[in-house]
Image (tube, rainbow, N blue to C red; front, top):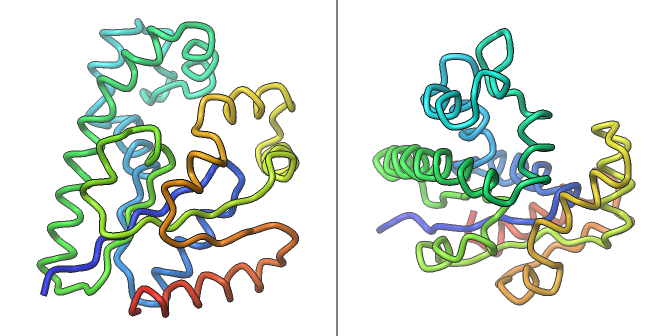
Length: 201
């Protein structure tokens, strides 16, 4: 029996990572697109040579990894830069995601969770998934959480949110939804465990 393939998504600061960790604790295999992207752009990562070639030495830190702050500002300022970045990184993320999901299938996992921040935006993921689980909250909650967690100014957080799908677009794509508004960490984990049960974990 093939593994059930669940897409997990939510805006920045929604609590998606906590839900992902809880689903793993309940027995799911996790394919984390963000973690893969960070690995590819870390010192020695597969994307580094292409990024240095596309954006020049200023895009790479002294340690040899992608300068994420520089890249974020550059991509915000120039939509072409964002597209060039995605054209380099996204195919490599897809390749590694497929490798990890095939490995989970080979291990006989019943459920594979694909943690994909831009699931709704990408357009190509939906047809590869059985169901989509969205972690939702108010935009002002996202802003407050990310400012507290990352120390970013409000304007930067708002720009990131503006570059992601809207709440309405994400909710329209959802088969299951966890509303992480006013929940404690323990309550959010409880909601994630309930979702895991509904997913047959």
